[in-house]
Amino acid sequence: MVRKLNFYPGPATLPVSVLEKIQIEMQDFQGTGMSILEISHRSDAFEKCLARAKQNLRDIMDIPNDYEIIFVGGGASTQFAMIPMNFLGDDQTADYVCTGEWAQKAIKEAKLFGKVNTAASSEKESFRYIPKEFKFTADARYVHITTNNTVYGSQWHTFPETGAVPLFADMSSDIMSHKVDIRKFSLIYAGAQKNLGPAGVTVVIIRKNLLERVVPNRKIPTMLQYKTHVEKDSLYNTPPVFAIYVIALVTDWTKQIGGLAKIEELGQQKAKLVYDTIDAYPEFYRGMIDKDSRSKMNATFRLPTEELEKKFASEAEARGFLGLKGHRSVGGMRISMYNAMTVDGIQALCAFMHEFVKKHK
Ligand SMILES: Cc1ncc(COP(=O)(O)O)c(C=O)c1O
Image (tube, rainbow, N blue to C red):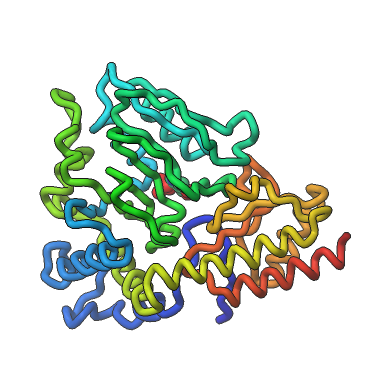
């Protein structure tokens, strides 16, 4: 078997050592005589695994003890609704910064529960930058940002000052990729399927006293209350057992290779390789995002014609480089380079990009 290089925007590539470990443990998870797919979520073996996943995340991301880490189902998209359902009253306002398609979806859900003020938006300019000026509401319930815009390929490099207003972030596509001061945020959520593990689980990091700000008297289904999952340590119902297990393995791997400092260093190397290649041929590869807003996770660019873009995707695929077509709403190309993508993989892709220019310009 030859493994291809997965540049998809998510689900993303996983470390090979993690896949091997899953294979080894598949028939007998830690001496239980059963696979992880079969054991009870209330078993000692799984509870230890869940605790390890949590502790690893806490250690790697330096998450303070007054924050709870929970694992929930429904993808990051369910968080778009769960956040306003819990924290935005009918007549209250939440501030959202609109930096792309996922932010738009979060705004759409928030409008179902309360008022939304779009504090800034780069929509009119095809989301090619992260806004630097904001019109925040003084008594907003919270400010919501999307730290990395997977579709457009932009990323926040400094976070807005929101004073006493809690800052919430969708970090689905750049969580655990670089050092972040968790204390700046009151709530962080991320679908696991890019930097943390497989699809099926969403990690929520929530400041415990935020629960005091839940909208009073609103009838919220038990499963959609943060309180439920915090109080029951993610075991109110059957959680996504396999996905949590893989997070434990991916975070073990992250620690083994040198933690967040190493991940960040490798991420910088990978992004530099990619953007240097794009910038070496300004007549041929045209980056879609302003340089100071470029993402270290997803690099987007266009070629001179759509014909060449199709050729780029098909020639890349023939070489084993998969998932390079841009999002259908944007077009062009996108290179996703999450934590488990190797520097070697990126070097191979960049070599192909150089060759492609020579062949087709
Ligand atoms: C930034 C961001 N937010 C939210 C989502 C939606 O995540 P999910 O598919 O887990 O609902 C994605 C998916 O790619 C994303 O990239």
